Length: 400
Ligand code: SF4
Image (cartoon, rainbow, N blue to C red; front, side, top):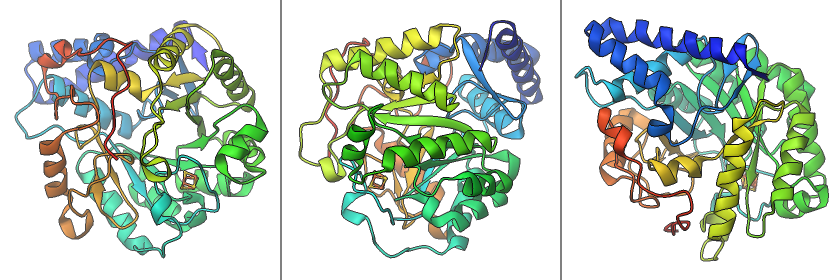
C-alpha cells in the first residue's frame, strides 16, 4: 500500500499517459480537455473520489479492484475506453470495460445468498475452448478487466489458466473464489498463467458466523489461508463481503483490519439481492445500513493508512447509475448466455457463435432495471451532470 508522494506521482503519470493516448485520435485542445477530465473529474464520472492510497503489486499500481494496474497494456485500454466516453472520436459505441464470466456451475459450498442456487451442480455446458473463445470475444469488445467466477472457478483451474494465457497483458484476469482450492500450489499456477488478482469471499470476521453463512465448516480457514497464499504468490488480493441486515460499524472495522493482516489490498462490499437462494425474501438493507456502508467507504478511503481500499459498487449505482447492463460491464453465465449482471438475469442472447455484439446491443437498449436513474450508456461531458441520487436514498427493489 502506498500513499502521499508515490500516489501523487502515479496520478501525474496517469494524466500524462491519458493525454498521450488522447492525442492519437483528437485535436490537441480536445485531447487536453479530455485528459484533464479523466484525471480530475473522477468523482462526477464514477460516483466516488479517488482513494488516498493505491495498492502496489509486481511493479504496478492499482487504485480499484476493477481497474487494470498501471502501467500496462490493459490500463491503456481502460484509459482509451474512458476517453472515448468523455470525448467520442466517432468510431462507434464506447467499448466495454469489465466482464464477469462463469466457467463452471460446480461448487462444494451452500451459501445463504447464492445467486446460482437453482443451477448449482449442473454438468459443465461448455468445453474449455468455447470459454476461451468467449473471453477473446469479450476482449474484442474492449474488456480490459475480466473476472472469472462460477460456481467455484478454482474447481476448473484448467479453464482459468487457458483463459488467462490466451488473453495475455491486454486484459487483467481476476478469479472470484470462496477460497476453496486456493492454496500455495494453485496460487502459483494462477500467477504462472498470468492471472493478476483474486477476490476471496469473506462475510464475517468471526469464523463461526462466516462458516454458518457459507454452509460448510472450515470455510473461513480456507478463505483466509487462500488469501494469504495468493498474496504470497504475487497476486493482487481483495476480500469480498456481502453485507447483510444488522451489519454494524464494528464488524466493518474488524474485517478491514483482518484484511490488512492477511496482506490484501481491497475490500469489496456488495449489498444483498433477492435472487437465487434469497429469491422472494426481504433482504434489502435498511437506509441506516446503506448510510453506514457509504460513510465507511468514504472515510476509510480518504485516509493515508495501510488498510485495504474499500470498493462499494452501490456508491456508484446510487450516485451516477449502474455500469452494468452492457454499459461498462455484463455477465456471461456458464452456458454462454449474456445477462445485465450476476444478480439481474434475463438472457439477452448468447456469447457463442459470434452472438456477443447483438447481445450487448440488446442489453444496452434495455438498461438497468434495478437502478433506473442510470442512463443506459453515459457518454461525453453530460456524464458530469448525471449525479442523480443522494447517498442516503433508500435501497432500490431489485426484480428477482
Ligand atoms: S455463492 Fe458462490 S461459493 Fe457460495 S454456493 Fe454459490 S457458487 Fe458456491
